[in-house]
Image (tube, rainbow, N blue to C red):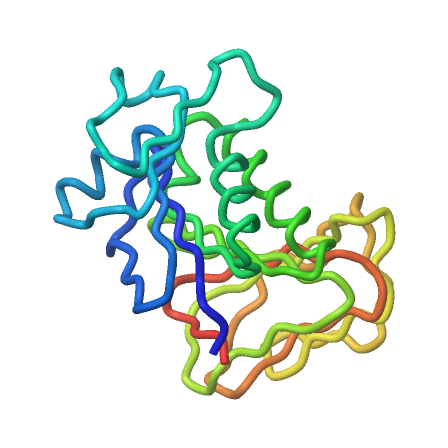
Length: 209
């Protein structure tokens, strides 16, 4: 199994903390350090301009950023993970609060997918992920809702199987929300796209295969 890079941001805290395994990388992005400290989790790296945390912590893996910058602390954390060879990223504390930061993190997922990687943005009640010219499979027994949006002008060859409402070889656009609020049925499910980029948002009760 490919190793994961976990990033803890300063947004809405998750229901459950990240659970890195040996070989995974855990990065605190600015105020995310305070949450990890409360959970008795020691990150490998702490990065940020520390406007959220208020002051830089005394940590051996501290990376201080200039507050005048083009990239968010979360994106800077992704860059650090990529520099260490990680391609799969799980972002906590990246939703809630300012909507602009949530949207920025969705764009981070798009960037990862277009570059051949994969990212998950974990909120309190749902997970965001993005797929580019590929598929996402869900295990049998998954429950709740799933929504699919085209992040491209057009996403072609979109298929949704094993869900309440099914699509086959559909062309999805970014100006018509046909993919909102589908439902898991308990069957194995799959969402795929031949060409284009899809944003997939599903409830925590669902589980990817």
